[in-house]
Image (tube, rainbow, N blue to C red; front, side, top):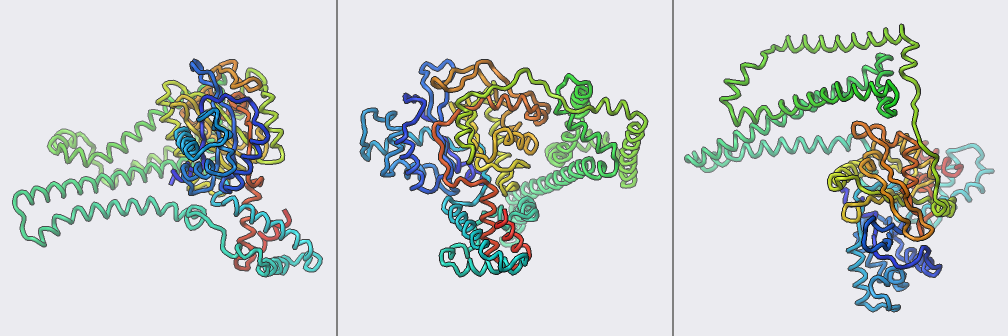
Length: 603
């Protein structure tokens, strides 16, 4: 599943670029023609990556970013591009294969294709905003939206404010228009945007996996008995096999139940502390909010330092203790199976023997203690209002300098001010690099899974407007390349991540840093001083919440593009609006679809 998402976003990193810092206009035009003819590429960008520090060959690398439709393997896509009669890919990369060949032969093209495959990198993680849309579909739905708005202006005087009649008239017009026959079929949706969009479908997968696991254990447990029933009483070997299978399956069965019960108890405790208690106690809610805030603050403040130290002294040991108890409870059947005499004669006598009544009383006392602590905090907040306000003062940040943006990056942003913006970001992996690469890949798989299964409507967390965002670990695990095509401006784009997807963004970049580097070529940005990603706490806190530091770090990592291609030039909201109009016009007539039609033509 994740491979499908990752293959939609490709970067070709070609080392040894000997060209200049600009691509000639004929090459721009040729690339545009090729990409429009192939008609499966949503976005494409070209940039230059500075040479690695200490590299004996200081030539930059040429990076080609491609964001494509779902379902295309990299080889199939590159084959179409290389063998296109326009020859733009040879004009771009041919000098690296055969410098003096202007008209490539079939052998040259195959060499280029093989070389591009060796240079290509599918995304280590990524997010697709406007999902399940082909380039052709977006263009056709845009035309449907434009034509519907024109027809709506004609019908407005006749129907006035009668929304139902107005929507019905537009629907009849669309059905009668032969140019829109394709729209009578509902817009394609993948499983997670269609039938699997509900919470029930998402929960069905883990529930089904659990049921199948227990069913498998039951089948394995029953197999020896079925064999004996069919063939008769087994011999000594058969009885030994039956005994081993029985003991193993019963042990796994008990361990599975123990693990489920431990997970359920932990989930209940998390829910209890994060949902009912904050809802019942204002002081508890304020305490949780303050802890979240303090974990994102600089440690120079007294309250932040106290929270940080308290987390290490109390929070981490408590979480480790809970995890240890859950693991011990889950693995207890295995210990009894492997060392029954030791467990029965040595360990079990030392364990407390509690009746159900005693366990219930302990639970009641624990709940009463939690309520008493909540009431105590409530009283303290009432009596020491001034001290409380002083302790929980607003978030502060420290930034040593104002951010300077390189003119080449500003120029690229100005060129795209009326369209979809683009970003290249290049950082280095923090040492040890193998560990940083492993951690980043794990974090990116989580982000990719969340985007694929839960955030299916063009929002990543609460961050809107991302068309394609993808991360690549390149240069043998030494550098980290981030590419993004997004709506709006850069400052607002980062604000959306800071406020809406802070945890995922911190996880993606926390193992990176900026090393001093020379510009790829004259007129390109370099890095004069080493920079570190803003420090994090407990893996996911702070980080990008150090807003100005994070924005400064992101700006320093940015590289300009030499070429940018946008097949549709539509925002995510516009793409979703056009798809929704298509389904509303040709769907059943109801109030929801009527409202969507009116909203689409009035927007």
